Length: 419
Image (cartoon, rainbow, N blue to C red; front, side, top):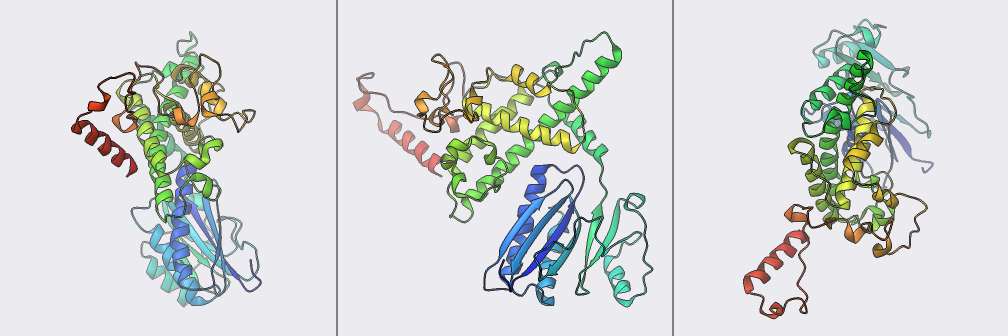
C-alpha cells in the first residue's frame, strides 16, 4: 500500500448455515460492487484483499481519497444495495471503516467497539433519524436475546453511520435442510453412506447409524446443487473479461470448484473444458436421484470427488458430527477404484505423458486427454461429451465417400463445442 493510500475495510456478516462456497460467492459479489464504486472515486488505481471466516466476509480496498465522506457514502450505498437485494440472501450486518493506517478497525462484528445492536425497529430510516438527532436510547441487549431480525448501526471514525440487518445464526435450520435433501437422494442406499452398522442389534447404535447416514445423504444432495452452481460461476470468471483463459492464469483462490482439480493440468482448464465438466457433473448428480449407474469416465470420478468435498463443507456448516470412515465408505461403494487419486499424489512426476499416467498396465489411463473417454464400451456419456473421430482409411474402405450430411454433422458438432 502506498503511503498516501487510505484503507477501506468492509466487514459483512453471513447467516450461519451458509457454506464456505456460498461465502466465497458473497465475497466475489461484494468485491465487484465495492470496486466499481471505488473506481468512480479514484483514477490512480486500487488494491483489494478479501477473506472469508466462519460467519463473516471481509474486504479491504486501498486507494487514495477513500477517507473522503463522498467516497465512504458511495461505497456504503453500494454495499447496502447489494445486501438488501432479495436475489442475494444470507447477508448479515455490515460495517464500513476507513483509516490511513494499514490495519483493520474491526476484528469481528460482535467485538466492534462502535457497534450498536438495536431491536424493535421495522423502519430503518426512522431509526437513523433518531440516532442523528440523538433521541434514541441505546441498548446493550445481547444478540441472542433479540428477534430474528435486528437493526445494526455501525458508526465510523468520521461520524458517518451505516445500517445493516442481522440474520440470527441457526444451525438447526441447516440440519433440517440436510434431512429434507436426504429424502430426495433416492438412488443411493443409506448403508453405502456410512461405515456404521445400520442393522446393528443395539437399537441406539442402529438409530445413530441411520441418523448419520441421512445427514450424509442430505449433504450429498445439497452439495450436488452447490457444485454445479459454482461451476457456472467459475465459467463466468473464465469468460467475463477475456483476460483469464485458464485457471493457471488466474490469481489464487479465484475459483470455487476448478481449484479443487489436479493442479498439474491447471493450464488446460479453460472455458470449453469447464462447459464439459458442468455436463459431466450434472450427469453424476442425475445418478443420485434417477438411478445409480457406474461412473463412466475420469471426469465423472473427479466430479464425484468435488461433490464429496462440498458435502464435507455442508456437514461442517450444520455442525454435524460423524464417525470416521463415512467418506471412505462412499468412495468404496460409488467409485470403481481409486486410480484417479494418482492425479493428486504429489509423488507423481509432473512430466509424465498423458499416455503413461496410469496406476498399472491394465488400468485405465488417467491423463487429461482421456478424462472424457468411457472406461469401456458399456459405459456411456451424454452427447455433449462424446468426441467424434474420423474413421481411419485402413479400417473403412468407404471413408473417401463420406456423404455431405455426415460432414455437416461433424462440422456442427465442432462448431457447438467451440461455442
